[in-house]
Image (cartoon, rainbow, N blue to C red; front, side, top):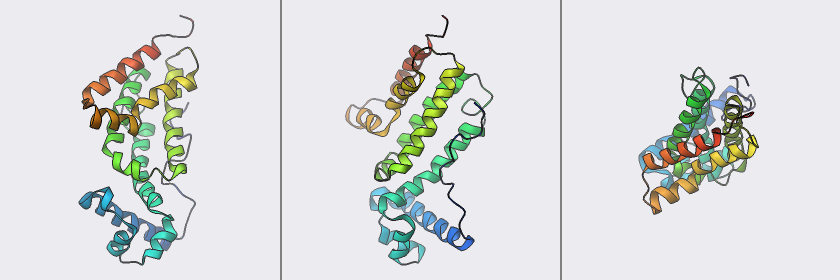
Length: 202
């Protein structure tokens, strides 16, 4: 697998007119300011329109729904994370041994999902965004497991490693069970070590 993206990085859309692109970016900037200042729950289509100085209809035409708007805000961050995986510094990016990259992936994905948990939940009504995020992460994990010559069904093993990093599970552990992040990270690393312990031909 090369280090170029196997799927389009989130946020890359069909080419649009420069004025339309500027308007979209202005709406996303307004939404991000509101998220940073008031929190995700306080962000409405009306508030974004007022902050950006446009009519609410403009926001709906660009993003269809609040979930679509939240997904677009989240995708800007997700695109940055994907870029780090594809071409950033090691060990998350290329250049480190695959085991180190695997462990860095787990830690980074855990921290990123927790940091954006509220946005991810708000964007849950945008299935295409969820599919794109999962596809990129799963493809990268399959690549690393293949590089490590792991035996077994690589696709299902990648799914097993991704599941503990999903927001519903992380929120259950951190908010309800009061499990600390370091313990969760250590548990994920232990799971990863068990997965990669069985090598092809061993």
